[in-house]
Image 1 (cartoon, rainbow over the protein chains, first blue to last red):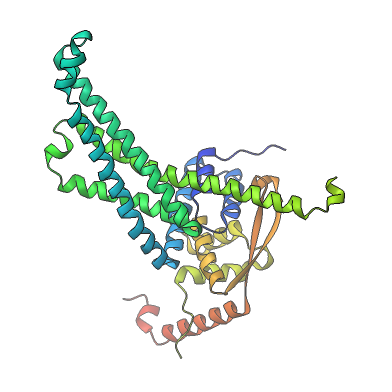
Image 2 (image 1 turned 30 degrees about the vertical axis):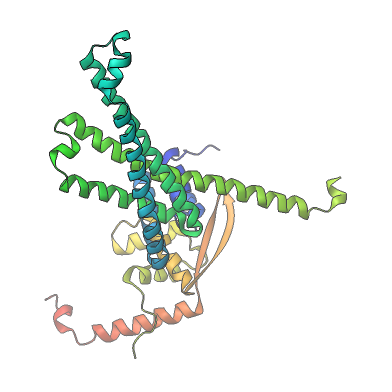
Length: 231
Length: 111
């Protein structure tokens, strides 16, 4: 007998981001109801509610741990950010576009204006890569430091990063973000990618420690088997 | 006397559903039972969150059943109200009964 398979992405998300102790039972129940005729939209909605509610439940029952994680995570994230962007600024100060053009520009196909434009595009792309890397490192560190409640803490931290960027966009001037729609879109794409990077960093830690735990458990099982049987 | 273990309205609904369902109380029938009696959609995630809180307080216990193909090879988790949980339900019922008594305006449908 074949059964209608539930959507894979939400299933994967709940498996990895669900903070409740009964994740497997919730997934089983969702699969059962989905096969009874519920829609994919219903499945996605249920998964979203299950992730949010389980994270909230976990945070509510471990308030002090969550506070400690946020106190540690916030400075790590923002300090890394300032350090990385100082480093990038050092690069642009050491090799400014005009200086670089005077050295290598004439041998290139670009004219001066094009060269300067591409230089700043490159600088922005490097900035985006740095932001993503910082997000991933922070997510990974937070998950590593808060092993028992890492899912809920990583979720809460990524939400706090998103909220801080929304707050920044309200308080920032037009020059800070960029006057055109292009720069505004770039600003938001960067920030959303960074929020996703925090989640991805946390997930990487969750997956790697899951594999380590699995290997450890397998080793224990093998060691528990008497030598006679193993040989 | 004040109830030393107050539970939320939703937690009470979950516990009543568990009592009604008996040995067949796992996520799906619990949510259907609450939906049928309250007339509202109930998310499975909310049911499990309430069950986890109740379990942490020792008001509900659970056991794992056999995995089935219909559930993608995942096992059901059956829940049961403990003796302590049953006492909390009775206390809550008594408190609510006392509060309802002597409210003629509500009984007549007036605010």
